[in-house]
Image (cartoon, rainbow, N blue to C red):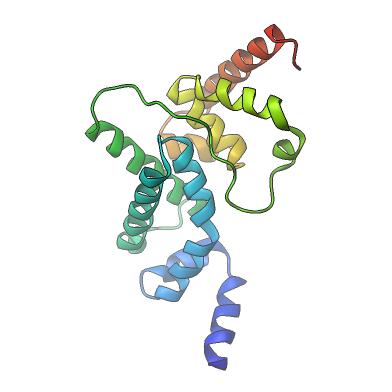
Length: 191
């Protein structure tokens, strides 16, 4: 029992990429990555899906795919970008299999992990609800990059890697999304 605790403690101190290199051979290494990324992947998937059940299923599929292809992670780039790319591809596949009806999302979910981002802490009450509704009304590509960039705090380069778009395209999508939100907030006399 003490050996397992020492092993788990040692795993928790390793970098993502080191754990990823071991994940294909060592289930404990993958379990550590799973614990690190479960909330973040679920939050990202939930922001792109209409209900919690679908988000849970797609999150599970994401981690199953990550485990199945753990040996294919070559360390070119970050593990975080790699796992979010798998999540994005899982969502894209799910959308393609669905009817061609537009995606209707009720609200962007509250963060699952207990520590909200500084931006989330500032936005409260009715303003938060309004912003959520405005974000949900954005085109899917803008909503996706906003979610990755600001909810998941990924760099522009990581978002580009995950979505398969150029950094310039990501910057344009972010600019358009922010401009649209700013304009709509200004129309409602909110800043």
